[in-house]
Image (cartoon, rainbow, N blue to C red; front, side, top):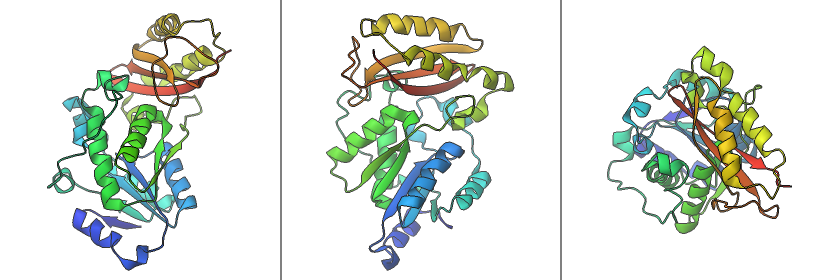
Length: 283
């Protein structure tokens, strides 16, 4: 695996003739890699001639400075994992270098940046598209792989690619979970042992909630029930839950079995914020 650390190094490598005619896969990450990331990388390796992975904790997408400060950095372990899954190129930029001379990405979010995650993390999605657009421009991948745990983020990146007419395909990949059902996340490393014991209750509760929803049920009433169940678990407090159209993320005021429905949720477990989402079965 080759490690590059600067824009100039990456640009020179990308312009090398050895890349011509090769199918290039890309997995952007913020490090603290786990099996969820590994699944994305393995898929890219299987489907492409060359796979690039970036590891960069992007300061622009943190609306809480303490969240940025406390984000886990595990560079040595990340490198070991990347080598084990046969990543070809690791890009390890610094903020000063990657943002030097770059003003960011301007796009029309169609309101997606102000709902759900965006409501509680102002500026977050602008920070996401700033770095993802920059990375796409530098790496120039044919395919980019993203986990569906960040369901809203995937929708926004797809929208950005469409608006900017970028010549690449976004590949959404299923959520990878612990045996307990807890969605794998770098933030899980920040949970205490006690919190790790109760965190899987998020998935249990949303799975039970979405198993068979009567079409006559109302989303608002179900969210109240969901909040009551989540908040009754030790350490937990629901920040938001939303039933939305799984294609365009439009908030649903009523259930319709002809419409694909997704439940998106954010829960505080102690002082660690966890997100998850699941498809709903409307009867």
